[in-house]
Each structure stands twice: as structure tokens, then as C-alpha cells.
Image (cartoon, rainbow, N blue to C red):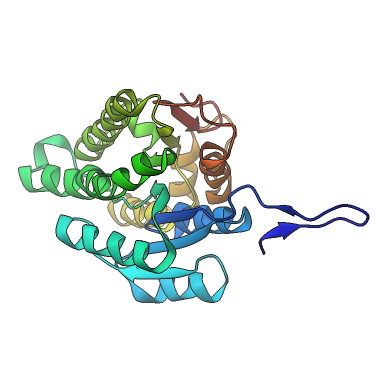
Length: 265
């Protein structure tokens, strides 16, 4: 779908028609919801991820137009994937870094390797894709980088020190790059969701159940207890904020951390 037409009115193009959007972690959760929203707004969307089945499902459902399997922790592979996407659909002008991972352990049981893993997946991968896409954005005089951070980039949580440190790093990167590109037509922002009903939270629920003996419902309620809404955030609610930051009219929003958390922070 590329245009809206109402009876008695001229057809008008959707707001992101002709823009190539690339979404990392685009096969599931927030990434998939973002890909769907961007496609509905007229963008041509590439989804990247490590598993082929969810990526193919996104294409089959019409949520994306191109996909590539890639481990984004490998910068060379990330650069190659963006090059392939650009060759297929044109320069990437909308970049949504939604890929991420979380591991938990008390700090004294959190080794250097876990800190490294969290940094590579949650920060270095976004740096790599942004480094690859930014020249094309600057050349076009237009671009949007949206990093999916977390409320963990705005506050601390127990037992996830490596994850919290990484997400704080991602937000710092967002704010620093935003200052560098200000005035170029490119903006860099972060969306910071609270606990969201995704596979990542499902994994957290499973860990809580196995370690504490609580039921899955009790574990989910524990994760949602800090949200004034009394529930988990929905992926499509996060995607709505991603879409806003990619839309025409968001040009003056730069270097921001947009919390989608029901008022938790």
C-alpha cells in the first residue's frame, strides 16, 4: 500500500513513501512491530536478525520487503548486510536499532564476559549499523536513527548490572551522535520502553520461575509492578513512538530519550 484515497479526494502518498527503513531484530517483538508500522506508513522495510523463520514470516505477512540473516555483533557482517539491503531497496534513510539481549545475575556472579556480551549486542551492534548507514543519510540531507534503549538506560535495576550499563551506554551514544549531526537533516533518538510483552521478557519470566518457584503469572506481575498502568507495555505501543520519530515533522526532536513506560520513570 503506497497511497490513501478517499471518495471525492485525490490520492495522496503515505508519509514515508520512497524511504528505505532498516530494522534490526526485525523478526520479533518491538522490531517486528516497528517494521509493520513503518511499512504501513509507506516505507520499504528491511528486517535483519539471526533466525530465518521470523524474518521470512515478516516478509510473508507484508511487514517487510527484504531480509538478511546476520549476527550484528560481527561488525563486518553488519556492514555487509546493510550494503545488501541498500543494493536491493536504496540507501537506508530510517534506521531502527531494535536488536538486543538481556542476561541477569547478581553483580558478584556477573563476570567480565557477561559485560562484554551485553556491550556487544546492545551497544556495539547499534554503533556498527549506524556507522554503515550514516554516510548515506548525510549525503541525502535526511535520516533518522532510532535506538531501542530501555528504562534500564534511565534508571537501575537489580541483578542486571551488565544490561543496565550497556543500555546507559546506548543512550549516551545516542545523545553524543545527535549533537554531531544536528542541523544536517539527520536526527538520532532513543525510545526507552519499560518491560514489554516480548520474547525477551518471556525469557525473563522463565528464569524467574526456575529460580524462585513462582508461577508465570506471578513472575509477569512482578515485572509489571513498577508500571503505573499495572501491565506490561505492548510492542505496538513502542512501535508508535518509533514511527513518530521517523515521520516528517519530527525534525526538531533530536538526542531525546522517549520513555514508553506508563509513567514508571
